Length: 130
Image 1 (cartoon, rainbow, N blue to C red):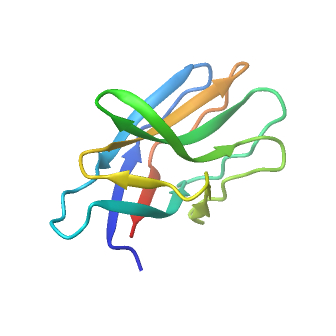
Image 2 (cartoon, rainbow, N blue to C red; image 1 turned 180 degrees about the vertical axis):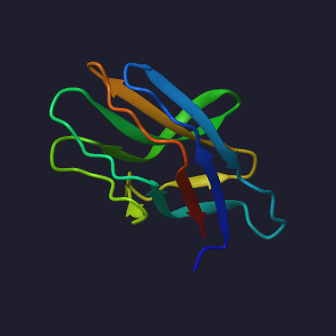
């Protein structure tokens, strides 16, 4: 069970928009906690997004500290055969066993490849911390 959940709703991202970044939230200060493990990252879309072979995109969840990227915590490449089904939470694979500390900012980054792949308005992103 998650100790803390940081979440955001991403606005629509048009194809060919390049790289888009949206803040998810700041890791909170807890007196008894020096650091948190990232337990799970979930992305839910209001409509189905179908992956593509060439004109595609990659979702990254990044850890930022003092304005610089520290790590990519989770990632999902929307290639052919990898789809986001409407209203079905997709659990992203974590990169190792990520740890974040109070004050770190977490952000959603969407990198488009080729002419890109659009994302609908209302994509929900949740990062569960333990």
